[in-house]
Length: 84
Image (cartoon, rainbow, N blue to C red; front, side, top):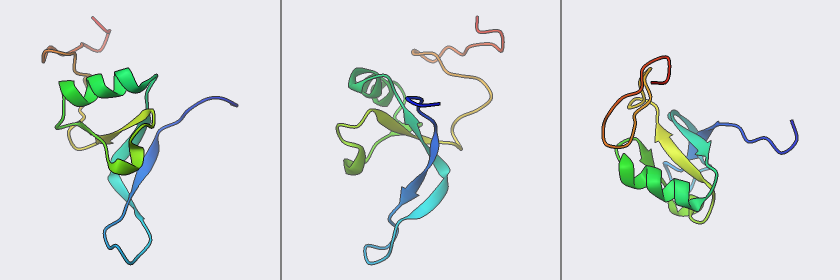
């Protein structure tokens, strides 16, 4: 599995004097490059976001409560289960 990227749970700092804690409602999703990251952030800022910690890093944060069983296409169209 060397060289493969995986999704992981975002660790959030809720108290500046305490260690970060896992936030199971947000996942960190690696992307191909910073251009893809910027596109996702622009297309759907309700779902995709970032923090200063991830500036310059090829990953976006994804709010799981917003993500449904169907993937969104740019422009608001939705993809069916068979990908069409």
